[in-house]
Structures are given as C-alpha cells and as structure tokens.
Length: 378
Image 1 (cartoon, one colour):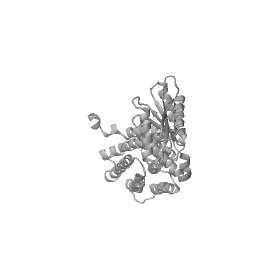
Image 2 (tube, one colour; image 1 turned 90 degrees about the horizontal axis):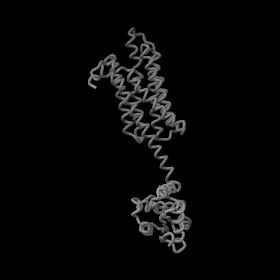
Image 3 (spheres, rainbow, N blue to C red; image 1 turned 30 degrees about the vertical axis):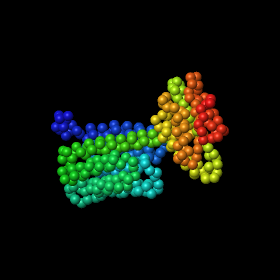
Image 4 (tube, one colour; image 1 turned 90 degrees about the vertical axis):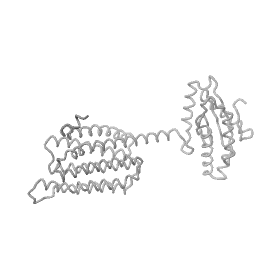
C-alpha cells in the first residue's frame, strides 16, 4: 500500500478510476434494468436511464482521454451528460420513496433544460486571443450551475427519502468532487496532484454509496412486498394461506403442536349496531391480545371474517391455559367475548384435520353458551 501511495500519479490515472466506475455502473444497470423490466415502476426507469447516461458518459471519457482530450463539442457533451445524469439520479432516488406528480416532473426536467442552456456557453464566441483562458471562461457557467444543482437537489430530496444518511453522503462526495475540480481548474490550471486524485477517485465513492442506497431500498421494498403477502391487512397477523403453510410444515416434521381456533361472539350484531368501524377496531384489539399472549409460544393468524387462530409451537405451553388467558383478557379489556376451541397434534393427523378439529371444538363452545374454551373431543 505504501508503494502505491508514493507512486507517481500516473499509476492512479483517470483510466483506472473510470474503469472501476464502469464495473460498478454495469452491476447497477443489471439490477435496476431487471427491476424495471419485471415491475415497470417509474423509479426504476429513472434510475436505469441515469445509470445508462453515466455509463455512456464514462465510456466517452475513456475514449476522449485516449484520443487527445476535450474540444468545444466534446466539452459541451461532457458537462451536459454530467448534469443530466446527476438530475436523473436524484429524480430516481426521489421516486424510490415518493409518488411523482406533474409538479415534480416540471422541477426536475426544468433543471435539465437549464443545464442545456448553461452548457451552450461552451460555444460562446470570444475575441480574447488567449484560447486557454477563453476555454476556462466557457466552462465557468456549467461548473457554477453544478453547485446550484447540488444544493437544490439536496434541499428538496433529503427530507423526502428514508436513507437520509446515505443520500447526504452521496451529495457531500459529489460536492467535494466538484469543489476539487473547480479549485484545481481555476487556481492550479489542473496540475495540483491531490486535487487531481480527488477528481478521479471521489466519483468512485459517489457511485459506491449510490449503489448501496439503491440496493438497500430494493431490499426494503422486497421485504415489504413479502410481508404484505403473508399478513392480513387489517389485523397485521398472518393470513390464512401462510398460517396453513406453517401448520403443514410442523406436521410434516411430526412436531408436537396445537391449534387454537377463536370466533368473536355476536360479531354480526356488533357490526349492525355500532358499525363496521367498531367491528374492525375489535378485530384489531383481539388480534393484538392474541399476539401478546402467544408471543413466546407460537404464531397468530386471521382465518377469515372474525375468526382468529393460534399455532402453538412450544411443546411446554399448555393450549388450555393459553386459550383461557386469551379469553379472559379479551373479556376484561374489550367490549366483546370470544368462543375458543383447541386441538393437539396426534401422530397420523394432517394439518387440515388439526385445524378442522380446533374449528369443531370452537363451534361446540359457540353453541353451548359462548365465551368459553373447549378442547376437541371433550
């Protein structure tokens, strides 16, 4: 490492930095492109487009570095691609967390139009005989505009995204890179060693943190999608499909499990007299009590309507005691009562039979006075 650090600056040339950036961008393009192809979300389209622009920009930079640098036209393209890709990246990040309305599109696309207008200064005629000074003056408007873009995007987007730390790091790195470029260009004629290194390698940090932000957001979205697919939207306990799957899983392994089946008493009357809002509220309260009581011994699910179930997976938990604790708390803490039945696994039983037996025990509790617990076969 010491040898590399003290090596000539050419060892750390722009080709090396650009090649590293291209590898990371290619991976990001695969991820965002695949997501857009399968899900067709605006955020993935914006991210994919911005990554394509950055790929094109960096590949052109490699080509220009190999063929003698920038002229008026290539300098115009270089600055414009940097500005447009920066805006599109920020639009994509915004869309990962927020719906995009017409006002936001006008804001972001307006920034792109302004970038196009500012970049045109590359072709502004000058009567100054110093060509190098004229080139520097031509670059000044777009360089200053990049600082404006950084502050505008940071101001608008930071409060609107979940990963604020990563986003602020991205903006800080880009600001540092732009600052190093501006100081190196206008104060040191592009010849300051450490500022040059900063120009080349700060974009790698920018791309890496951007990759982490995109990856983490995708993980968040996938987790949210999976969670919504296995839980009930109202009560937030597991849905019937997932509950049945877990029961079958334990039965296949011959585990000593039990199922509690509960039904809220007089639920239709509650809905008719106090409204569906009250019915929904009671369902949520009953589900919460069942989750609290079964937290260390099993999982809770909504089987349909006002029916809630518990799969007891802890062999040391007494189904009768747990069911009675749930029944008692519901009676004491809510305005409803529940009828409960339970059944324990016996060798040779199927998952469907176990749930059906608990349901039958609940029905017996329902038809013999309600607000009680009945064991299957009792």
